[in-house]
Image (cartoon, rainbow, N blue to C red; front, side, top):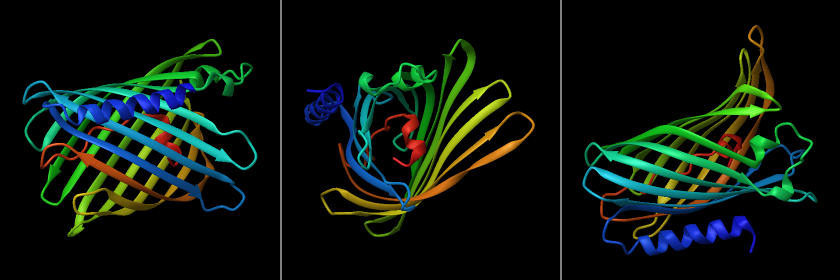
Length: 266
């Protein structure tokens, strides 16, 4: 069994067993597919994710989430990233929670080019950050911000940043309007490059079952050398997926994985 399959299986086992635990406060399983609309980009993106939160008191919870991201491009070998994120959560009340997280991206060793100076980023990237979520009548909002200082090709001043916000609003019974933004930035002094994905969509909740969603989005790449800002282009994508949340009545899933992959259309 490959490392990525092992991690995915472990997360499934954890989520399934935790679902029966007395202290569970929320959980989620999901699968997503997205593809770019440009016919010249023959790439399909697949995501499997799961997460669970277990409460140790009304105020404090511990969460674990995992995700597997696969990119399939024509006749080329698939590229697979795996993410594991641990969350420490403080519940201000039933509607609002604050958290800190440690998330780590992994790329299979055989897929890394040892001559690539950015291989260190690709092989293992660990982020530390903060997150928050709140729900209100008919809607919810969740956001996160994470950082990593990197030593790339002998340069120890490189900083990687991940940032994201997602929101849902119940526009009609069992139907939510979705909005999301995820950004991944690599900066070195005054130079930087940023990848950002923005999406809008809708989700239909099946009574007693999962939610089925569709989305339309755009991925853009931009950079700066301190004096000049440059846009390297953007591409549109569409996505479909299914999510299943579980836990006590009134819960809204769990904090998700924190990964750079969310900024490229996954």
